Length: 410
Image 1 (cartoon, rainbow, N blue to C red):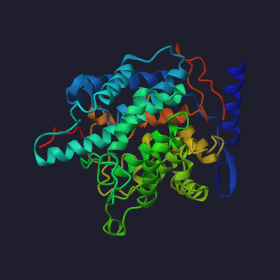
Image 2: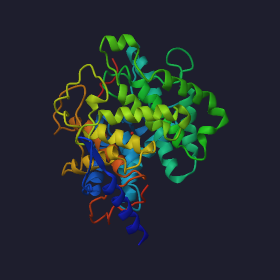
Image 3: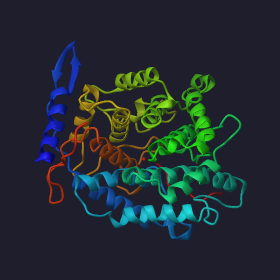
Image 4: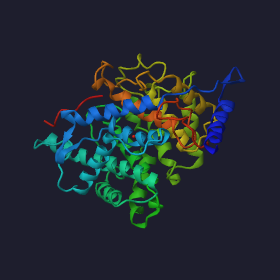
């Protein structure tokens, strides 16, 4: 009975409050339709299973590369679906992902980097790989600890590995060396900011007041300074119209500030929220090509009406930062997500880097990320929209209020 009441309250709040401004008149939006949580889980499991079996994903010690497009969103989103679907245990693909992370964390000084060889470029990629992996490992294990409420021994070790590689001097002081394959938005010249935000998220969500630990305060101070001072690109880059992930960075910082409120002030947070509202499309979606200036945004025509990745990421960041699902912009975004799930269970997004065939495995990378972040937004503890009834999902009820070896491109 309590579950039904909570589900009704959540749906009622979203339905009653999801409104938008049209000519100065508040117009109610309809209750968002159900989305198919079971189909989303099947899609994510299949994609992670393919990634784990793809020869180009294989790494040292029998592990698999943790990708920003497929593995990270999967690690963050799949446990949330398990709760919605009332599953008793993690799928084999999820167990493999976490086991690989733990293996590499424990054997940190023995495992080879994700990318490396003996050439100068290969040695650079080894350094970038270590920094990137250290942050991703810490975030994945922190997300697990957040659900259990206990700091695990593996997470402590992952954070030790991460902090040991944090840059202490120079323009990059506070962040980490980050993979740069010229692949936007996660592995390019501007991506160290994305990595620093992920590190802040990991620190903030680690339970038992980990962020206040005395021994990591110098690291946290460095990280906070970097995130504040590098939020915007240098003037010369903007004048030359180089990549400028302005609102993408703000979305990541907003997400990070949810559990590390000292990162930004309340006024700064409100300013970021307002900027994201202004970038929202009339139908409730966001576009990756409109939350940043990308020098070669070849996918702009395909995603001119919004995409699942940007919409899911921005909506989730807003929710995590305390914006209620009853807020009109978030309500419209959740409604857009609920109506734009593909019958295959996925949400669509396109590459910023190349025109790719969406029917191919590589062509689905951005949609993997879109599906993961759409699921996170729709299953956020602050606002779970109704999930479709399936054999594994009773109602989706919930309480109201993610030369070196060739790189698979995005």
